[in-house]
Length: 424
Length: 83
Image 1 (cartoon, each protein chain N blue to C red):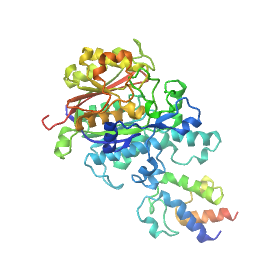
Image 2 (spheres, each protein chain N blue to C red):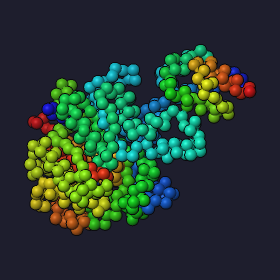
Image 3 (cartoon, rainbow over the protein chains, first blue to last red):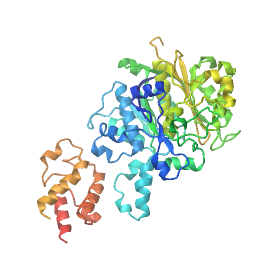
Image 4 (cartoon, chains in turn orange, purple):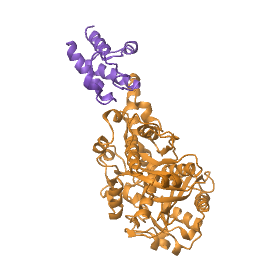
């Protein structure tokens, strides 16, 4: 078995692009939730969301005109975060004619994928019997693996390049799967995480389910309210968050900067039994997932210093905390510190786990925990852990942060990150 | 439309798909679109669609398959415009 460390990260989120800007946004509590005119025009109940700003300008500094011809929003977001991650890991962006890098692969997940292409180009043209005028770039933009395939080509990756999809667990699952590959010595490096665009058509099904918050359209920054008594559903988001996972041997050999070590990771399913369903987790599945992660890491529950929760701002938030209490078997007063990045950027679906893993590692590396917005009126069932809920950014000297994600299909993911301090 | 005008328009329509740096600086009628300009072969479909939209012509698949050089494209467009 190989030790696995994080040597690079890239993020583009509704409240910031790049590690520096994103960290500042997290620390200052800058929300990325804004009024979205398209949602209002389309008569959505929820008319706020998290959309990455200035994307049209940013992408021109990353990609050529020719490259952009076949890059929809999710592929573009994955490309930007992937190149940032690559460079942050101390690697040089290769020339298109460079040698293949046989030592690096990528698992980049997406929840729903190229919906902007499907809704804006594919469906209208086919419906008008104009299949012949679709052009050559439809397949590469609507195939789920578009988010990993394009980046793999841009960077000349020669390891496994693939896309996973497990609803809202996607990004975390990608990190777990990539972690296991490096841990087992199958490859030296893997880029892992998730990307998701911001198409109203992606978000429409959730609005139709009435699981988006439609009660805060006049105050967008208040709309995403994880752990709040007045939580009314989640706010849709978008973005990409990717991490370079690398064997410790490889990182050490090339003198790479190390952010953190991944000491455990696990994904499972609750089987849609025991209270679990397509839209709700089986508590036993969650408990098993968390415990298996801790078992792999060889740590005790009391060693988990903080949790970056899934915590979307639905009725499931109190259940999530209860599942953690059951998994850790700690009394409420000893519950780890907990926050929700979704309070700042909304729920980026397939990208959420990736962005939140970046958040967890940034918090460890930079010794802070960001405040979880809009839970001043803590949910009554969470009063017992009130002291653990981080409402304003604080300095943090903990060593271990857990990142958990839970998704439709009763699927669960958990990763344990440990601070790297050169004494490890 | 004059052949030179067609040629200039054809080159401008192909240019977004050119991947070889600097290749457009030495372009001529005999320039091979795939080999010399580094255009991805799949993108020929998009280039032909651009010809159809810009020149208001229709290019059958068989005719499109005959395009190898910029000169081939200019010749094809010219013949369609004169039909």
